[in-house]
Amino acid sequence: MLDQLVESKSNSTENRRRSEFIGVIGVLAVLSLLTLWTVSLFGKDFGMGGDDLSLTTLVAPVPVPDEEPPPEEKKQPEQKVDADVRKELIQNMMDTPVKPPETVSTVKNTVREMRQNVNTILGGSDADTGSRQDAPGRVVQGEAGGINTNAGNGDAETGGGAPPPPPPPVTKPPVPKMVSGGVLNGKATSLPKPAYPPAARAVRAGGAVTVQVVISETGSVISASAVSGHPLLRAAAVAAAQGAHFSPTLLSGQPVKVSGVITYNFVP
Image (cartoon, rainbow, N blue to C red; front, side, top):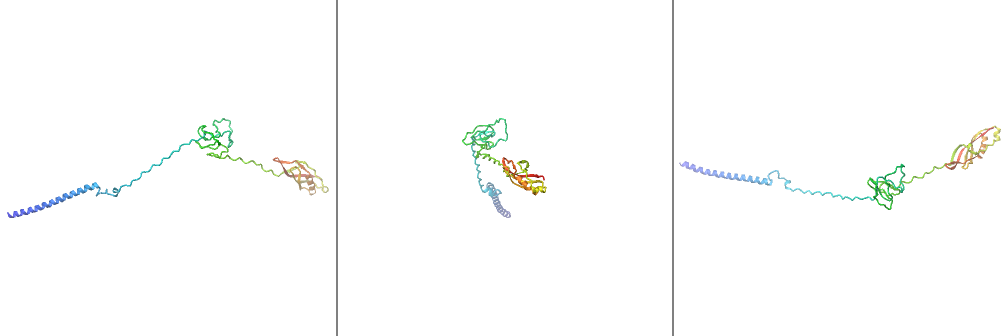
């Protein structure tokens, strides 16, 4: 009986300790679970304990300034040209022409000519929209541009400029001072016959003697020299040639000298 009581007392103490140990373990387990639940709960709210925590989530982005819009271009008001409009630039008949027409036509022209002292532009119609000016009119830049058609007006805005210079005067070639006349026997107005020298007659000398002569502007012989023939006959031929006379030779209306030959035939 005593053994059972002792044993019963001993078991109750051990059971109490075991209960206290289990209670402590239970409390620790509950605290651990609460701690883990609290950490997991607040860790999700603040992004802690995961890969989401990075520098990019902690640093605020730098604001990018907005691009300024490009400035609006101011449209310049269109300036109206004070000028007539012509479909074709035809110079006024009272103006000095810049150049003569390339072709002459008898067909009436339906395009109106440009007015004097009025600026003109090239367009698609014929309209007198310009006002007269004190200075000569000119062709200004219009719908299709233009050219200067007024002689002497060198300040046109497009093309033209001063009129072309006049062509150089035609100069006549200089008249030569002397021309060649060939054989002059048939051109003489007076041709004396040479005397037959006695010495040549004694030896029965004869034949043709050629004399080179130069005739002046008035037709007289100014020089004579024998170039062929018997020596005894040359002097007589030269003397006869010096007494010859010819009509003046004209070249381009001006008298010139003539060089040629006179031939004399001596018969023994």
